Length: 194
Image (cartoon, rainbow, N blue to C red; front, side, top):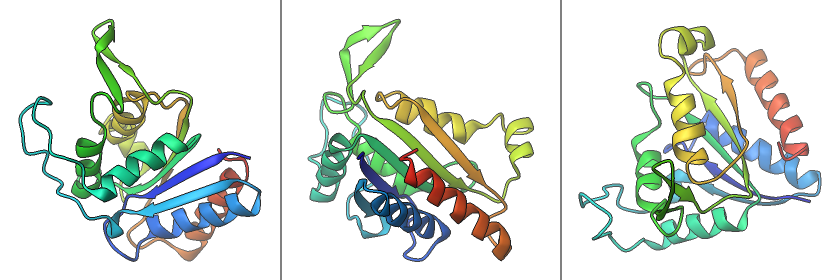
Protein backbone atom coordinates (compact mmCIF):
# COMPACT_ATOMS: atom_id res chain seq x y z
CA UNK A 1 0.00 0.00 0.00
CA UNK A 2 1.28 3.46 -0.91
CA UNK A 3 0.19 6.79 0.57
CA UNK A 4 -0.81 8.92 -2.43
CA UNK A 5 -1.61 12.62 -2.43
CA UNK A 6 -3.30 13.93 -5.58
CA UNK A 7 -3.54 17.60 -6.50
CA UNK A 8 -5.89 18.55 -9.32
CA UNK A 9 -4.09 21.69 -10.48
CA UNK A 10 -6.82 23.07 -12.73
CA UNK A 11 -8.52 26.20 -11.33
CA UNK A 12 -11.93 25.42 -12.88
CA UNK A 13 -14.53 23.27 -11.17
CA UNK A 14 -15.06 21.08 -14.25
CA UNK A 15 -12.03 20.02 -16.30
CA UNK A 16 -10.21 17.13 -17.88
CA UNK A 17 -7.56 17.54 -15.17
CA UNK A 18 -10.23 16.93 -12.53
CA UNK A 19 -11.49 13.87 -14.40
CA UNK A 20 -7.94 12.49 -14.55
CA UNK A 21 -7.42 13.14 -10.83
CA UNK A 22 -10.67 11.43 -9.84
CA UNK A 23 -9.94 8.47 -12.13
CA UNK A 24 -6.51 8.08 -10.57
CA UNK A 25 -7.98 8.30 -7.06
CA UNK A 26 -10.69 5.68 -7.72
CA UNK A 27 -8.25 3.22 -9.29
CA UNK A 28 -5.60 3.70 -6.59
CA UNK A 29 -8.17 3.15 -3.82
CA UNK A 30 -9.55 0.09 -5.58
CA UNK A 31 -6.03 -1.34 -5.61
CA UNK A 32 -5.46 -0.86 -1.88
CA UNK A 33 -3.58 2.44 -1.82
CA UNK A 34 -4.37 5.16 0.71
CA UNK A 35 -5.46 8.29 -1.18
CA UNK A 36 -5.99 11.93 -0.33
CA UNK A 37 -7.01 14.46 -2.96
CA UNK A 38 -7.27 18.24 -3.25
CA UNK A 39 -8.72 20.37 -6.02
CA UNK A 40 -7.09 23.73 -6.73
CA UNK A 41 -10.50 25.31 -7.35
CA UNK A 42 -11.45 24.54 -3.73
CA UNK A 43 -8.35 26.13 -2.19
CA UNK A 44 -8.41 29.70 -0.91
CA UNK A 45 -5.13 31.59 -0.59
CA UNK A 46 -3.36 34.71 -1.83
CA UNK A 47 -1.30 33.68 -4.86
CA UNK A 48 0.97 36.71 -4.61
CA UNK A 49 4.19 35.97 -2.78
CA UNK A 50 4.16 39.65 -1.87
CA UNK A 51 7.72 40.18 -0.73
CA UNK A 52 11.00 40.11 -2.64
CA UNK A 53 12.72 37.58 -0.42
CA UNK A 54 12.33 34.85 2.16
CA UNK A 55 13.09 37.09 5.16
CA UNK A 56 9.49 38.33 5.38
CA UNK A 57 7.10 35.63 4.26
CA UNK A 58 3.35 35.82 4.63
CA UNK A 59 1.80 33.36 7.05
CA UNK A 60 0.36 30.38 5.18
CA UNK A 61 -3.39 30.25 4.89
CA UNK A 62 -5.06 27.05 6.21
CA UNK A 63 -5.42 25.57 2.71
CA UNK A 64 -1.69 26.02 2.06
CA UNK A 65 -0.85 24.47 5.43
CA UNK A 66 -3.05 21.51 4.49
CA UNK A 67 -1.31 21.18 1.10
CA UNK A 68 2.10 21.06 2.81
CA UNK A 69 0.97 18.52 5.40
CA UNK A 70 -0.58 16.27 2.71
CA UNK A 71 2.60 16.45 0.65
CA UNK A 72 4.69 15.50 3.70
CA UNK A 73 2.28 12.65 4.49
CA UNK A 74 2.51 11.20 0.99
CA UNK A 75 4.90 8.66 -0.47
CA UNK A 76 3.74 9.41 -4.02
CA UNK A 77 2.54 12.81 -5.27
CA UNK A 78 0.27 13.08 -8.31
CA UNK A 79 -0.38 16.36 -10.10
CA UNK A 80 -2.89 16.90 -12.89
CA UNK A 81 -2.52 20.20 -14.73
CA UNK A 82 -3.20 21.88 -18.04
CA UNK A 83 -0.53 23.80 -19.91
CA UNK A 84 -1.63 27.36 -20.64
CA UNK A 85 0.59 29.75 -22.62
CA UNK A 86 3.54 27.40 -22.16
CA UNK A 87 3.19 27.18 -18.38
CA UNK A 88 1.00 26.10 -15.53
CA UNK A 89 -2.09 28.06 -14.46
CA UNK A 90 -1.24 31.12 -12.37
CA UNK A 91 -3.07 29.85 -9.28
CA UNK A 92 -1.11 26.57 -9.36
CA UNK A 93 2.20 28.43 -9.71
CA UNK A 94 1.08 30.69 -6.87
CA UNK A 95 0.45 27.65 -4.68
CA UNK A 96 4.00 26.39 -5.29
CA UNK A 97 5.47 29.88 -4.79
CA UNK A 98 3.69 30.33 -1.47
CA UNK A 99 3.85 26.81 0.01
CA UNK A 100 7.23 25.39 -1.02
CA UNK A 101 9.39 27.53 1.25
CA UNK A 102 12.85 27.26 2.82
CA UNK A 103 12.76 25.07 5.87
CA UNK A 104 9.72 23.24 4.52
CA UNK A 105 10.66 22.14 1.00
CA UNK A 106 14.40 22.92 0.78
CA UNK A 107 17.28 24.02 3.00
CA UNK A 108 19.28 26.99 1.66
CA UNK A 109 21.79 26.68 4.54
CA UNK A 110 22.82 23.23 3.35
CA UNK A 111 24.02 23.43 -0.25
CA UNK A 112 25.69 21.11 -2.69
CA UNK A 113 27.21 22.64 -5.83
CA UNK A 114 25.35 25.85 -4.95
CA UNK A 115 21.90 24.26 -4.80
CA UNK A 116 19.85 24.05 -1.60
CA UNK A 117 19.29 20.60 -0.13
CA UNK A 118 15.83 19.17 -0.83
CA UNK A 119 13.75 18.38 2.25
CA UNK A 120 11.03 16.17 0.75
CA UNK A 121 13.09 13.20 -0.41
CA UNK A 122 11.68 9.71 -0.25
CA UNK A 123 8.69 10.53 -2.44
CA UNK A 124 8.03 9.85 -6.10
CA UNK A 125 5.87 11.87 -8.44
CA UNK A 126 3.59 11.57 -11.45
CA UNK A 127 2.36 14.51 -13.51
CA UNK A 128 -0.56 14.29 -15.93
CA UNK A 129 -0.26 17.27 -18.22
CA UNK A 130 -2.84 18.25 -20.82
CA UNK A 131 -2.18 20.62 -23.69
CA UNK A 132 -3.16 21.57 -27.19
CA UNK A 133 0.50 21.65 -28.19
CA UNK A 134 1.46 18.35 -29.85
CA UNK A 135 4.24 16.34 -28.17
CA UNK A 136 6.58 16.87 -31.15
CA UNK A 137 6.15 20.65 -30.92
CA UNK A 138 6.75 20.59 -27.16
CA UNK A 139 10.10 18.96 -27.85
CA UNK A 140 11.26 20.63 -31.06
CA UNK A 141 9.84 24.13 -30.67
CA UNK A 142 9.73 24.62 -26.90
CA UNK A 143 12.45 22.26 -25.67
CA UNK A 144 9.92 20.66 -23.26
CA UNK A 145 10.13 23.78 -21.07
CA UNK A 146 7.09 23.19 -18.86
CA UNK A 147 7.79 19.47 -18.59
CA UNK A 148 11.32 20.21 -17.37
CA UNK A 149 10.16 23.01 -15.06
CA UNK A 150 7.59 20.77 -13.36
CA UNK A 151 9.77 17.65 -13.21
CA UNK A 152 13.13 19.18 -12.27
CA UNK A 153 12.80 22.80 -11.17
CA UNK A 154 9.82 22.28 -8.88
CA UNK A 155 9.25 18.65 -7.86
CA UNK A 156 12.83 17.44 -8.33
CA UNK A 157 14.20 20.53 -6.59
CA UNK A 158 12.31 19.69 -3.39
CA UNK A 159 13.36 16.03 -3.51
CA UNK A 160 10.73 14.04 -5.40
CA UNK A 161 12.41 11.34 -7.48
CA UNK A 162 11.62 9.88 -9.84
CA UNK A 163 9.03 12.19 -11.34
CA UNK A 164 7.36 10.80 -14.43
CA UNK A 165 5.14 12.73 -16.83
CA UNK A 166 2.17 11.62 -18.91
CA UNK A 167 1.47 14.19 -21.63
CA UNK A 168 -1.97 14.23 -23.27
CA UNK A 169 -2.69 16.35 -26.37
CA UNK A 170 -4.68 17.84 -28.03
CA UNK A 171 -6.86 18.40 -24.99
CA UNK A 172 -9.22 21.37 -25.54
CA UNK A 173 -11.65 19.46 -27.73
CA UNK A 174 -10.34 15.91 -27.59
CA UNK A 175 -11.98 13.02 -29.36
CA UNK A 176 -13.86 10.69 -26.98
CA UNK A 177 -11.63 7.78 -28.02
CA UNK A 178 -8.52 9.77 -27.03
CA UNK A 179 -9.99 10.67 -23.62
CA UNK A 180 -10.96 7.03 -23.02
CA UNK A 181 -7.36 6.02 -23.77
CA UNK A 182 -5.95 8.66 -21.43
CA UNK A 183 -8.28 7.58 -18.62
CA UNK A 184 -7.38 3.91 -19.18
CA UNK A 185 -3.68 4.79 -19.00
CA UNK A 186 -4.35 6.77 -15.81
CA UNK A 187 -6.16 3.81 -14.23
CA UNK A 188 -3.26 1.44 -14.98
CA UNK A 189 -0.69 3.80 -13.50
CA UNK A 190 -2.82 4.38 -10.41
CA UNK A 191 -3.13 0.66 -9.77
CA UNK A 192 0.67 0.49 -9.43
CA UNK A 193 0.98 3.88 -7.68
CA UNK A 194 3.13 4.94 -10.62
